[in-house]
Length: 108
Image (cartoon, rainbow, N blue to C red):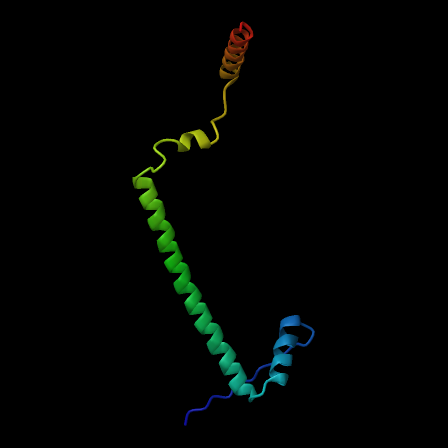
């Protein structure tokens, strides 16, 4: 039988250490079994999370690729996007155009 002895210390002035110590004190099984159970549970959760994150990333990249291939909005997306900044000359031209449009509407 191969048994390893590991010493663990808790600094009760630190919140996480105190919580872990309190957990062990209230555990219905031996310290060794409680620590082994928690470590194995953490490792399984960590591996599952990594697998789920990789799967989610593949789904997101596939969706991005497919949306990039076929623009389902048929060019309507450009109307929703914010327009690029205008130069002072373009702003002046737009102001003149607006005045012309308003003058035309006033003629009715």
